[in-house]
Image (cartoon, rainbow, N blue to C red; front, side, top):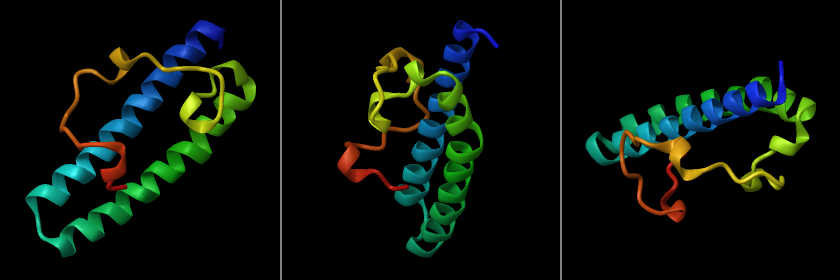
Length: 96
């Protein structure tokens, strides 16, 4: 994999994580608290697997792509996250 291909994959993984987070906010805002808790647990597991099994190995190979939100040097362009599925609110409201 080239560095450019790794950057594309990094953007995709960031977008998938953001959409999972948005889906949890959607369920939080449109379903019961019990269903949200169950859904949030599933999303949390998915996000953990995404991070441990896909992102960590990618950023180990290409440390220059480690996003700033994980303590790295790379700022993912906001355009990567567009279009959004659902507006979660602020980071402080992060449901997952």
